Figure 1 (cartoon, rainbow, N blue to C red):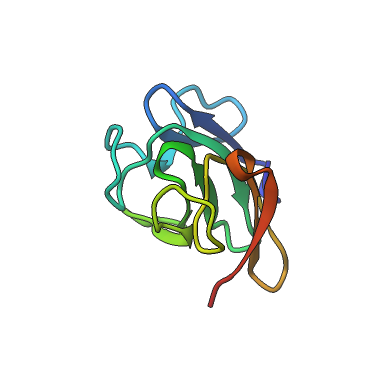
Figure 2 (cartoon, rainbow, N blue to C red):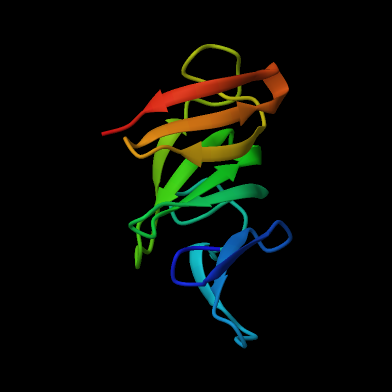
Length: 123
């Protein structure tokens, strides 16, 4: 839940993240929503979400082995962690799970398949 009281729900079946206001039954797509895939406007098996102070949504995109950032109102996201395919190098992830972003914009990712936590500095 963000500081405005919105609840964010990851839907792994239809590969999207929705934001809900209290009493809202439909919600608003804030990430993905264009079917399963690896384009910048798609997700593939999203798992975790983090929302920063600017209401940007960070999503661990499990099957694409990346973390995506969707700024408020964006139609597509940007890759902020990995995006280099599945692997175990320092620029790769293997089934990313939890994601959190600190006040400096540093992204921390639970890299489940590699049994580690990865740190990514973004600009």
